[in-house]
Image 1 (cartoon, rainbow, N blue to C red):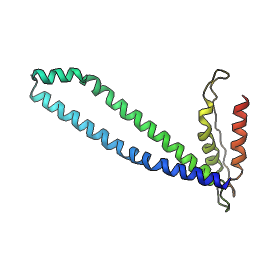
Image 2: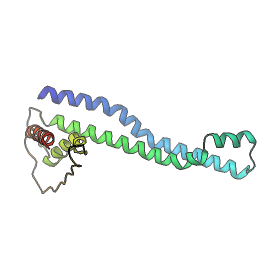
Image 3: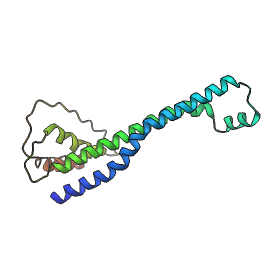
Image 4: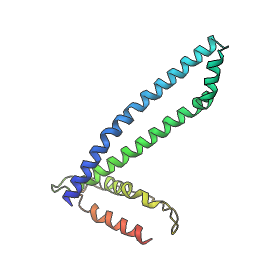
Length: 163
């Protein structure tokens, strides 16, 4: 299990680097795009009668659609990057749960990480409806070992297969 934890931690690290780069640059790219659209607005206000080539290209690229779709596109990319970041964090948490040394482990974080890793299995299939996970956590002290989450992960996975 320790080898599996190291493998998962390594994969999470390798995924995290490019995703962090993308996630960190999305806000700037969105601002740059908005600035370009603002510049275009200024040009259009000062030169309302454009030449035929500009009008044709505006129609070709469907400028009105681009203006309305671009914010949605960036929002979608941001949501995707956040989802990948959450999965990576869950993989990191899960990989630390099997460390040999005793460390304080947040049980809620371990359960959440396990759920995040197997979340795709909650989707509806031909054989079953969508599975909804309702989390109602109480107050729990930190645990001295994360090893208990490995069997919990196996139990949840086996349970989902049996549904």
